View (tube, rainbow over the protein chains, first blue to last red):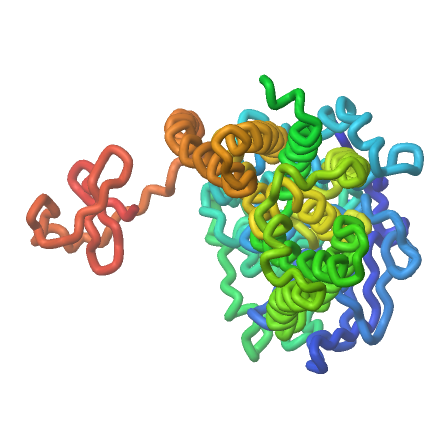
Length: 272
Length: 329
């Protein structure tokens, strides 16, 4: 079983996986993010919460260098983003709705994750020569998300939840130290949300870090270590989820459903 | 097999076989990126190169390759800039290429008729020099398109994800359009510039109907392309038809034949993939306003088939009978 390279436990002592300081991002002249601070440590699940247009996805894309930033700093594994080359260590799981993977099997989709690591410094043609090793990694990743039986199915024939887990498997095939996910529950029915949440919890329990954009904390609440709440591009909360929604509440307890409207309400429900 | 004794037929067959292999190979990436008409546009741009060659009295093939590659780089540059004007820019480039080609051909005293062999293909025009260029360039296209297939596939399937992997996405995007430009131009003698785009797209569509997965589809499309290109040349020799048109109509025939095969395999496939949800749906009882109204055929509520039972749409909810009460589904 692949396990993330990050150290287990002693999270506070080690270098943050992601460290964002006073980040400012403008898109088309419009300020989207202002003075944003976010820290993700190894072995942590950090949830990025906020309403539509609060800047959650923009923050994710800025961290991944898919868009540039105008102010502040982004450090990845202690290195400035501009000088960071270990992109294989960051497993990106986009919203499944944004991808058109037609005429492609699940196995082929997951295989693209193995392109992340270099074999002896060369990528190019040598990827084909490492097919057997890559196939093992893909098989492990599919096992971790419980989709081994669907490997040869067309990606577009899978259910929403299976597609989402497939994209998580693709990121796991990178053998990453951190997973970065954009609304992994969007368009996934409730029954499959559980399995997605457990895939993330398993990854965290093996020492990996997780940064996940959520629309609502339902399903994930019991796994979230730190919640970062954005409103209009600013961080309005950085810390634990309130007691009634954070830890040690099983499925059988009171509903953990927390609509976004409440999170982003004018009167903050968060403890000072 | 008397046609094999003719030198021009040997050259035409080899050139067609290479076009039949390379066009669907690069076409698979272009279809994956949903740019199916890119090849058509590049064909138009290449016409300007042919016109320029006719006007200056140089060999058409090398000049057409150069002009088409330059056009392809411009097109990809426009696409990456993502400007709203990119679409208009493409249209201007495509029709500008066609118009400039025709204009330069008429300056050369040949008119549009002089271009015809390049637009629709012509078996007797493949010279030994042309064949050398075609073999070299198509070889290059195939080596890159197959050798870097995992990377090119990753970029075409999900550009953002490929970027986060640290892949040189811009370089691969330029590679794809340049390879497409080379393929379009090298196929102009056999299939023709106006028809080669069909050979990039139709075998791919047929193969994706029959074979499951990107790489099987890639191999299948190359196989179909090879068969229709070679048989198209042979048929056009015996029936005295335009080779490009014959090849394209043959590939459309293969595509039509792929439908019944596809629907058969699809039916088998969907039955197998139909796995039940691992966790049962929460059992939620509908509010008890059903004492006065039991759902049944003809109760006035819309009936929806749901697995092994019928749901009734009731005030925006789906109700299903369960013993003495109704469940929300």
